[in-house]
Image 1 (spheres, rainbow, N blue to C red):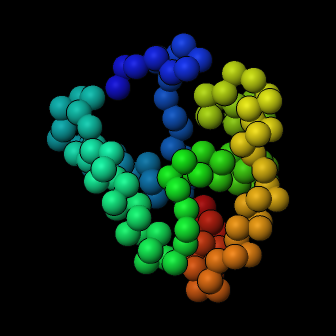
Image 2: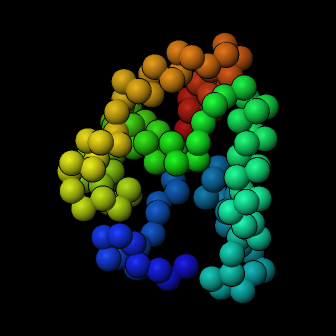
Image 3: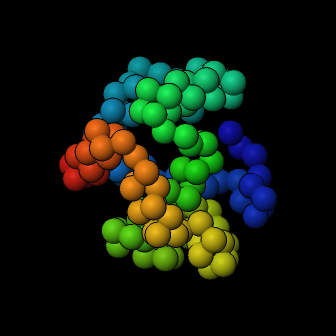
Length: 129
C-alpha cells in the first residue's frame, strides 16, 4: 500500500529478518507472482479471525497490536538491534516512542504467564534464530 503514515512517510519498508526461515519462505510465496501483488489475499476481518484462532490454540490472550511492542522489546532485550535500528524498524521518529514500546520487563512478565508447553515452544523458536 502506498499510504502516508502518521509521520508523513509513504515509502518505508519493514525488515523481516527473523526467524531465519522467514525470508526464504516469503520469497517462495512470491515466486511466479506479479511484482507488488499481495502475498496473502486476506482482509482485516479474516486476519483477526486467524489471529484469534491461533491465540486460542496457544491458550494466550493477545492482540495483534501487541506485536509492535513485543518485537521492539525482544530486539532491545536480546541486543539484536541498536535503538536507532529499532526506531527505523518501528517507523518511530522520536526516541520517546521507542521507550514507550520497548519494555523488556513486560516481555518477561508475559512469558512467565504462558503455559509451560507454550513457553518451551517459544523458547525453542527463538533459540533457532
